[in-house]
Image 1: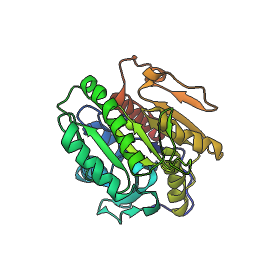
Image 2 (image 1 turned 180 degrees about the horizontal axis):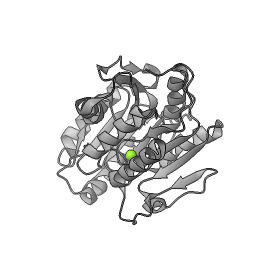
Image 3 (image 1 turned 90 degrees about the vertical axis):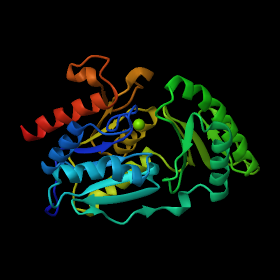
Amino acid sequence: MTSPETSPVLALLLDVDGPVASPVTRDVQPGIIADLLALAAAGVPVIFNTGRSDTFIREQVMEPMIAAGMPAGTVIHAICEKGAVWFSYTAEGPGTVHVDRELAIPQAFGDDVRRLVAEDYSAHMFYDETKRAMVSVEQHIAVANPDYRAEQELFDADAMNLMARHGLGVVRLDHHVPDSDDQIDFRVDPTIISTDIESVRLGKDLGASRAVEFLAAQGITPQAWRTVGDSRTDYAMADWLHHNDHAVKHVDVRPADGIPVKPYEVLTAADLGLGEDVIHDDAGAAFLRHWLAVVTG
Ligand SMILES: [Mg+2]
């Protein structure tokens, strides 16, 4: 059990798609599962902060961790759908799934996106039925990524037109379409394997604030955080932590987009002496192994 008022040397706040789950196969390497368990057993809080659904986390992360032998008393927190949904799990399985309904996309719009995908885009992508607050449309594994990315541009434009028809103000990257009250409430966020449509209040920063809250409720104040991601939007975790006076370093496992200038340290696989070809979950795995060596001496 976690004793009251603990102060672990490290806490991990992890994006899942990319650093933990392979963006190609969508599943998690057994070595990553083993190292996550070893880190948790060594007292390092492990918290997932993902755009994925709670179902994805249960199937791809929680179930393999439990099957591999999760120590009794270990609690893992999972913040899903960019902060709109969260749950915790132990060796006994998942606790209650919480949904912040105020952050959910209107149902009628979601229904129209489902229809749009079925009618025009089903060869390249599918509607994620497991999402509770966001609308996500994801690349089929069998489709080549460049083919998907080209089709995704068309889908995103159609989705934005659909939002205008529903009177929803929306922003995609630099493209702003306010509603009739000049209000932007939603965003279209294209990732390398999906498009997420979500409240502008969702984000990895919201997830970071929830992560700090969950640990505080357990009496845990980490001495330092490590955040890990593969997208620009993942830096929002470290931005939020730094801004709120927590010691943090961010790991970028897909630095091909360039490393932005930040007031905290940004690490890549090169900092572990690895080549530029070590990216995605291979880079994630290398950092987990590194931190495990640090905390277990
Ligand atoms: Mg990711």
